[in-house]
Length: 197
Image (cartoon, rainbow, N blue to C red; front, top):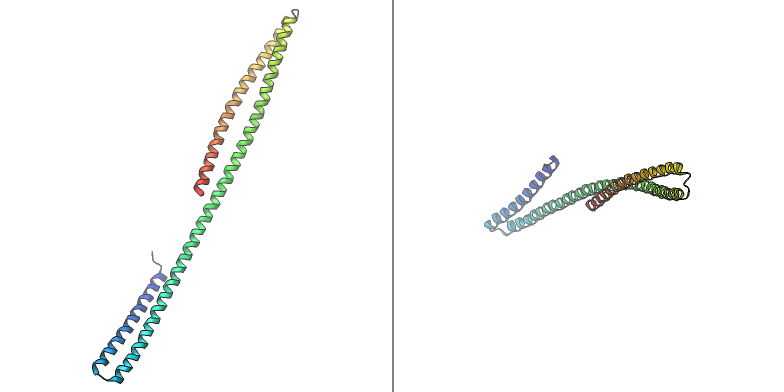
């Protein structure tokens, strides 16, 4: 839409151009009219008047041209400022999104590290339980008099080993899920960085 100031400027410009054209027409008519009379002093005065009117028309046209150039430069500067502001906002949004995603990735990394530690500890517990089970089985072969006691201990160790295996399986499933989420977050972060680049 055209602003009132813009339409006012256009009216002024068109008026200036019309005045310049009228000045040139008056100069031409004056010179032509005096040329018909054949009076050299009148033709000389009309020629001088034509030169003055032509100079005035040139000055008006030059002023109009300079005003147009200044207005165009002002419009380009305003557009550049608007584009710079939009670009700054987009850059800030990209930085904010990247920071959010990096924070999310750091949390996921911490969770994965914690689960890996727990998995390692559970695996050590499982290995210890299996070693204990082996010890108990060896004791069973060497001690026939303590058969009932050793059988109970072996059953207990076997149950702990089974629970440890189940726990390891659960932790492995959690690690797989968190790894998939982490990779999805990294892909989203990379896509956002490509978009803002």
